[in-house]
Image (cartoon, rainbow, N blue to C red; front, side, top):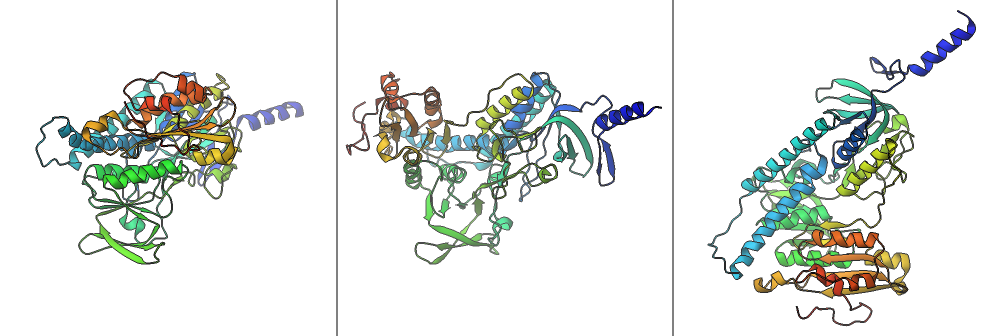
Length: 520
């Protein structure tokens, strides 16, 4: 064999074979044809990962998705679908609905319904119904993957190199997959304050609350994020004695005037708040009660109380530590643990992408992950170029009095444009449904933040009241289309609705006039 032929053969085998040694395994990561096992491997079977994998498969890509749920610290586990389906949006909204029905029962008497006392709620019945619905969604996701020819693997995935994924079963058995592109969509999990004695040993998180077999009883919710307030809200609504412990402010990152209305209503609704308080330790007493000791930063005193359950809602951590990102050079923000991503969801490694909650600077919202995943799949398949636009994404906090918003908060608008360059239109209104029921509507409020000059482009919309998500969805479309105040005021409202009040705003904060809506 001549030198030229030898060199060509050596080049052939060098380019066609890539060997990786892992512990006692030596694996071939490309086959003789120079192709990978899959066009795309997705790590994470949450809403975003599933959307990405199904979209890619529909576009002709060969796709596998790996998903494995580590049980919570309390041993809670669930099926395919990620946080939203199993321990987030879906069970939260259903339990929120259970609480709203409790309020509706009280209203019903004013509307002529004869309802005998005592009216009580049964946790076991609700929980079983919610959990059965969640399980049906788990099954539905598996069927959809099969129908769309996406290979589902119940394996814990990690990276060996830029094209190789190691999958590990619960028993520790390993398998290996190669892919042209790899997408990471592993989301996040609730954090425990591990520096607080007894926090993990005796507490639960949102990973557990929806799967409890018995009612949590008297509950301390630590934290003031939307997760904390939503959980505290529905617990109060179904009759559980609930206290929220807040270190500083509620709903950080949201408009703070609106946050104040939300918590004011919750307090009137029956949820107790401990403001400016920091938990110190949790002890389990012989009776089984949990004794919580905390410091009140306003008085400097130490206080204690006993609870049946302590729910930690103090933030979430991205599921990135066990992915082997350092092995392949994927850049991670050391402070947050999130993956640094570009506008196209790219990471520092050319064929590895990440989106959803694990992306640095990305909103932790299911719909954004779903949309981003589908757009990424189209780009990777060569079927599109559109990037995800993360601006003006609407969201709703499902507290007893719901709060929805889109665009900038008043604080953000002032920060970006200056106080003199914005105008805030607002109104306090009373939902018609509240009138006969004689319900307090003092926290039902609308705020429209606009540019002060020119056409008065709308920068942000905020609403507290019934059906907040349904109200804001349509207005978010208007904002994306560049809506101005005149567009809003020229819109004919649907009467009688809460949403129509947005089309009628005319009082500015700057004027100092009473913004209470009168008449019908």
